[in-house]
Image 1 (tube, rainbow, N blue to C red):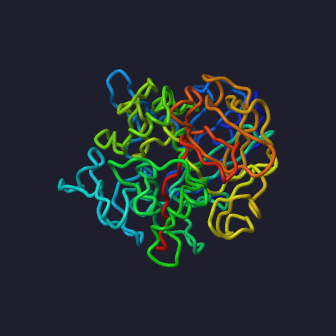
Image 2: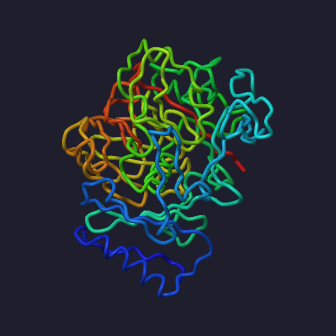
Image 3: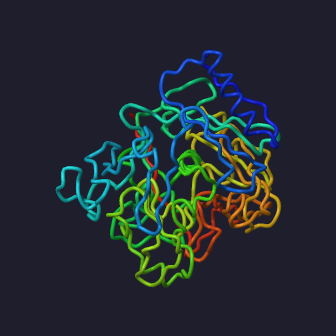
Amino acid sequence: MNEITKPIMLDETGKRIAAACEVIADAMGAEKQGTIYGMYIDGSEADPYEKVTYLRDAVGMVPAFMDFSNHVFNYGSWENAFFMPRPCMLKYDGTVDYYLDPDDYSKKADGTASDISDTSYGGNAMMEWGRNGKKIWLKVAPSGDGKSANVYIADYKVDEGFHDYSFHNSKGFSAEHFYTPIYNGSGISSQMRSLSGQQVSKSLQATAEITAAKANNAGADELWNIECLADRILINFLLVLIGKSTNTQAIFGQGASTGGSEAINDTFRTGVHNAKGLFYGTNNGAVASNDFANAVKVFGMENYFGFQWRRTNGYILADGVQKVKMTYGTEDGSQATGYNTDGTNYISLGITPEGTSGGYIKDMIFTEQGMFGKNMSGQSDKYYCDGQWFNNSGARFARFGGNSDNGAHVGAFYVHLNHAASGAYWNGGAALSCKPLA
């Protein structure tokens, strides 16, 4: 038997049952062909540090955390995990030109000068996911009322419940790698770019941001677009896994989240943490003109949360119903080819946000696709510790992460489902995604 059976759990005894299910699965002889990290996320547990229980190959692993006192990221047991990405310079055709020194992006891996600040360079600075021939397979197994789940992250397809949606390209194929942005998107000669030393784009409607991102495509085939939901879901789960907590700000850094304004943000230039390794943060979210030392960096990406909302393809709140699309094509079960701005033919999750718009997330609902905010009546240090905005009328295009004046609400889960695709604001932008054809 090589299937990880979907467990049936009750919230009040979920941790014990989760552990028992793992023992039973092993006793039944589940074949193991590679690594399967697991975690149980307990929806009934308010303490973010008790909310996550390690399962399978994650059992005994030491969680990672940012050592704020010594300004050093402590990887715990996770530094060499198969899913860790690599920084690179990616050409417009979706091929890697060369890899960057992960501790100093101004240098190539061989120590010579890189092109991260060269606006004439024919490509972008990106993080490459999928290492040594190992893709990242995700399975979400909801339990009870859907507020809890077992989540598995493996380096092979264990059973049909595992998906590698982030690796799927516009042709419907699973490529060897996918790429996420090192930097917030910057506008250079009508293109959205991911380069160091640049001012960040702002105040654009979704269609303009998408057009600028697609301008990186060298031909008719679509490789480049703005960020997509499948990548955000996967990376968020990876953050929970390595940090063993749903308080991403406390584990990885508060991010640029306090004191910001349009004038202050205009002084920001990408690349503030080029020499800080793949992870860096502080427990102070304050920003000031020309001072963004408190910006957060996770998995090599600057401002993954904080500083600026980032518009994200594949997630729409349509008249109060959350709708998602995990792949460009229809292999995810949707009926739309390509992304749109109103959720037409997306997968309907049947989840309507409730509570206070702008409040902290108390309940997430887990589905095969990921986890999505349901009830916003939590607290800054309880449950998921991040906020969620929502408007249950009309079509609302998702933006993630929060901005430089959102305070404690910012974090990996912070999502804005309050504005239409036509919204254009100084504190909102987008960043690049690339799905190669091979």
